[in-house]
Image (cartoon, rainbow, N blue to C red; front, side, top):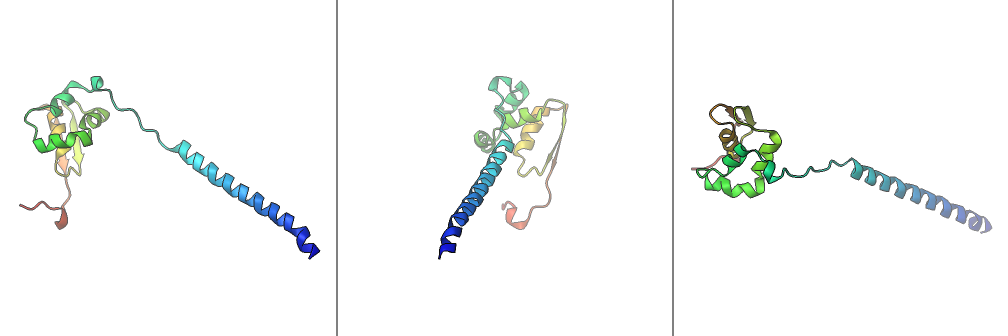
Length: 129
């Protein structure tokens, strides 16, 4: 009985030290992850969006369905980030329905070229009609 009482404080101290070590290790890993996380850059101010991009987005003959998607997709920010300009050659890989392809073609204009690529669509992704 006396041996058990004499060892018990050591077991408590050892378990406390191991627990503190584990908590410290977990917290330091979490903080390290937060520090290593990439930071999101601020959006390009509206005044710095190039005019050809603004003109393409605001074109009156753009499809209404595409205009309805603009708020969520932020095409002005994307095109400004990519640096799309008149006269460029641009490839839109996995173009989907062509939302971005159509805008890119408006921005690069007749002096530019746009390549649009889609692989074959599976049956469940094909549009009916």
